[in-house]
Amino acid sequence: GRKKGGGRGVREEDGEEGGDGGRRGDRHELADLGLLVPNLELATGCSPAHLPGTPPSPLAQSLSHRILTLLHTSDLISLEDLRIWHMPDRIAQPETLEGEEEEEEERVPEVKAFWTLYMDIWFISLDGNPFDAAWGAVLAALKDTKLPRAWWDADRQAVLCDERAAEAQRLRLRGFPVAATFAVFEDKGQGSWGKEREKGKGGGETRWVLADPDGFEEGLCEEEVTVVVDGEGGAEGKVLRLEKSGGVVVGVREMRDL
Image 1 (cartoon, rainbow, N blue to C red):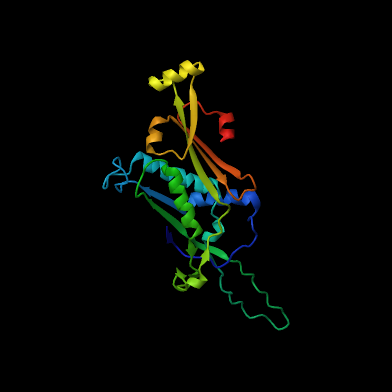
Image 2 (cartoon, rainbow, N blue to C red):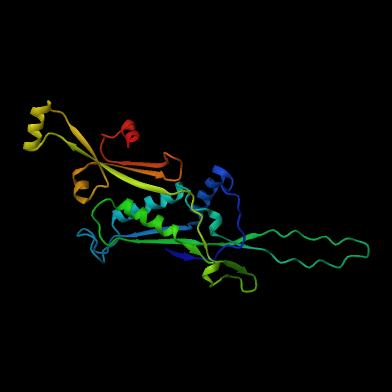
């Protein structure tokens, strides 16, 4: 995506940055300052339902909001990577009398600005399951993003950036959250095939869980579940988020099975 602002001058190398408490603080500050701005565009002719030149559809707005929410709740991006630090100059002290020791004022670095990450997601072809594709694109872009070294210039009252690519630094992403969407198809015994099945197996409904449903399958399914798992959260992974829409088939037990 596009980057706005400056870079980093001072970095904290404390790993978890205060543990869960530090991550929650980062989450709130990132949201309050609006430093992460995903923008999803479907009006590209990617499907007959999304022609060029049309206003943003409810689906596009919903997907943008879901991506922004996941960026915040997954704590993927460290706020420290987006801070622009400045070390104030020493303040000249008045001359001291003979025999008195000159006291040096301690300099404390201060944050002068932030990077803002703009993530523009354009769909070329849409045939179902847009969220997983959009989130995968965001994750790949962030892993490849480098921020130039930047600093605050007190004389110009502006942020300056180093043009040398060797001085740029990658974002320190926390984990590798992967999204997987499943759709639930219910066979309610309709049609000739359904009648034969009822005669052979005593009737009743049969359900199938479809991974990565395409547009045709989404049209036949009333219920979808999206699971976000951190691939670096251990051998079995760590579930970061569960989303469910439509239907009443999938309950707690079924979601655990997924």
